[in-house]
Image (tube, rainbow, N blue to C red; front, side, top):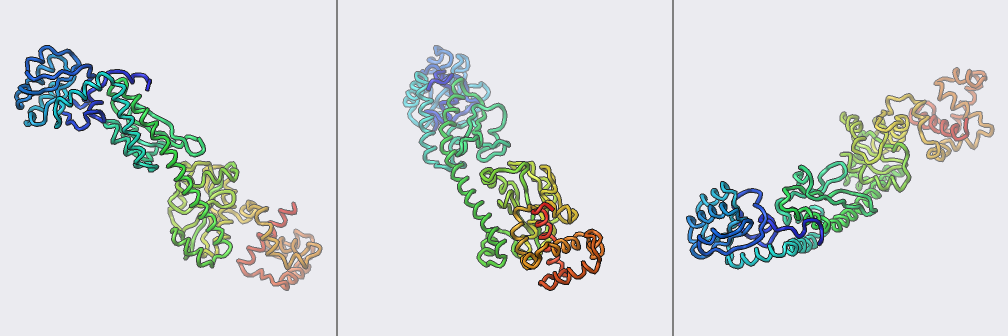
Length: 480
């Protein structure tokens, strides 16, 4: 240990807080006093007349025969600029003795063991301050090993062993992950980075408090460094658990979309607190600019933790759903500032249970595309149908569109039926469609009869919307 100040003189505070006199009771100034450069055993009060500054005075014999003698020793220690006075517990009984130590600014250490043993401990630490500090570091290493890979327990050990220092584990946003907010107060005594499993900086371990000696910050830094490995292991374990949870949630959503009646999937969703009955609305967060799949996976745990409603990875972003909630708009608008990646957001209209979840998610995703820029929320039910349909992902919907229109595609050799159907759905009437296509209205009516004969009901709203969407997707795919 050769850090700056490591060999500097030991202080009273270091002796008591985590040092060789950890069992002593400290009375007197709150900062614990200054340096200890020597130790003197005093069996008579007269001995105090010849002590040098920065000496720890250990009272024995006649000098420790009751409170009056201890108070006299405190006064003489103050006159000689002594570092501290050590007295046996049996000699200190009155509150006035502690009050006098406070007024004089002389630390009084009350010990239960033989004062002569205490004198040896102080002499050893004063003669070899680096060794005394190394003992503290070694003890911290043992306690950290017992704490395992729990961030709460690791930081708890640091706060217990580095008495007088406040330690906190904080993320990049300044959120306290473990420990005390007092660790953020004022300039740090020491601060070390805690890397994540991939080597990126995950958090910082920060200690604040009074600098007890020139060597104290180096001691604190050395102890904080010992905590980096278990905290990195904690982060890896937490990230693995989060990744598993994220993968499970994404797979569960896929199961619900494939079969909204899957009882096992519905039970799993209900166990996670997801809405599985009644009306619901879907929402989608879409990264701007788009993220690579590995980056989506990396950000998923952080995104899920940023919102108090379900969010799982879905397609090229994140999605979720919940019962209609008047506060959902505000919650989504406030979300971008807490996300690990910039996103636009889309919100669907109300869907009828899990059976309508697929359509609601498609609407929400389209609305997120319409939103465009990061931090913007668009509601699907407030966007024009043409604008919403234009935003839907053609490559994703092409196969489902061909499945919806399969009978029509098989019968429509020249494409006029699909063109006519699309025109009617776009314009809203056969007459307007005939004008767009440049044909007679009766021609449009005849073609629509052929479409109906293939099993398509243009008067049924849900089927009409599905046909409109399928026609739009196929036209986009063909560049029409």
